[in-house]
Image 1: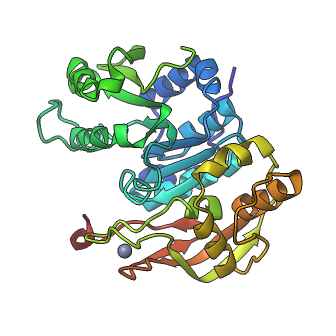
Image 2 (image 1 turned 90 degrees about the vertical axis):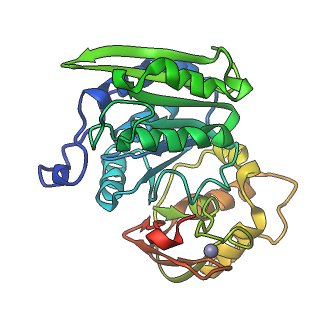
Length: 211
Length: 123
Ligand SMILES: [Zn+2]
């Protein structure tokens, strides 16, 4: 059992600027914990979280993998979030490498086929409407990242994505099946109803290793 | 935290800047040394991801001259410890990183690099 990271160093003031962990965050933590053995068996060296917010997810991942076993990069376009991520890392003795950046842009060329664990809980709440093809911000961000996932993942790499029912899960999976290497290698790790929402954690594996 | 391990993974991503955009050059740095647990397996496993010349150049820019210009073939414990120190224990808390090609400046403040670009600079 991996303890939920301590966020007692963050205050109400911080949550005015940074997304406060909610059901979607906890479903992701639970999914990662369920995957813990299988993640460890990959011996990941480079982890990357997009939109790290408070840093709770990367800190948790650090304790799953072992804080000195990998590099935990996290990006967030929001400078307050990057600061919170750094603080949460130190509070939980899980050193994180936060960068203020949009998605992966400054890392993309050097991390080509180098990321072992990629994690993304998209900012659906910051303007999600519902349709995959529609112009909702959250979904545009997901679509922009999905285009890049295959170029980032290492041969043993995997990608964990939080989705909501409105995202049209079959469409998401179909999208990820376009590159041949994901054929038959996408699955729903966890799904849970949270209030009116239905949350999913999807896993995309580039190549099957000891699953 | 801007440590050299992270710096080694960052390239300029400004519009039109696609060659000679790595490594970013450090200037006006304020450094701090913070101990980190030595994990030789991690260093060995990470080494293939490192661009050696860029690491040597960056470490010299911030005043550490301990790394040899050529990556040694033999990865003995002394070398791995030295590399651990350079990659993970030297923190650039303040300063800036400049693109060698387009000269875009990415500032570092409280250990966090700001890699954002203005709207017109985005690719
Ligand atoms: Zn440039």
